[in-house]
Length: 289
Ligand code: A3P
Image 1 (cartoon, rainbow, N blue to C red):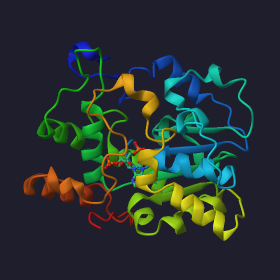
Image 2: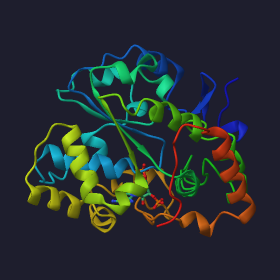
Image 3: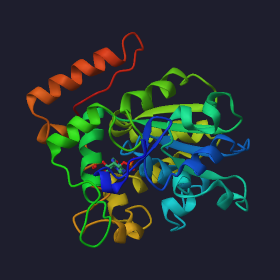
Image 4: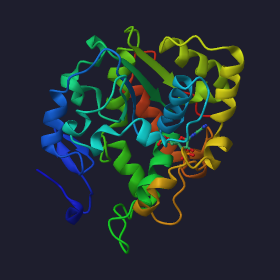
């Protein structure tokens, strides 16, 4: 059942979903029994949907617009990289980042838990291209990358969920179906791009922060793509050793870069798959600016 780097795919299979190998079975079991605290905040997403962007915004909201220089993954640790026991001493209010699929998270019960969840969704064409760039730069060693795939191969893998965190469709749908729960804020990358200030305000309101308009303006300024690309606390500079030299976290930050990778045939297949996967759910995405 279990696949490994030796099989050509750098992952573990957990409950039928390909997960990063550092998310070992024992951790996934432990996270099912995780105790959620009422003032916890979880920033959740399928990878490459604007997670870091949101982490930075949430941190700035909590600090009334002041950047304390603590990097996003220190301020909001990535759950899968750690065993739950490592968070025992963490002070409340705790903030985490996680890409865990809804059903693998805390016994599959985020919507009925007492804490708050912000879920980021992004159109799957841009997600797949962004993930392709991220994955192909991930090093196994100084001479070996974990995913030496071509775009065409990666596309095929993505279409069938043969990537970390499994099927994108399966990941997004349960969060969308639970989006009206009081403790869940479902945001789309494309809406944030169109009106970043409004998104900052939505997040602040959801987290029960009543910030001055000039603080909201300042947070919007500090969380632009350009500002975050320059900021060593947001641009993943602390992760350099894990990736090849060509890796950049703030890569393009646009809607529609997929057009530089998808063939017309691949685009058509994705459009058809979306129709098939989300009928009658009302879940739709924008694919261009
Ligand atoms: P691209 O690779 O398309 O550029 P995550 O944090 O979930 O891994 O998402 C990373 C993606 O979000 C990258 O997409 C990155 O450039 C984009 N991103 C990060 N900060 C952003 C910002 N402030 N505005 C817009 N896009 C941003």
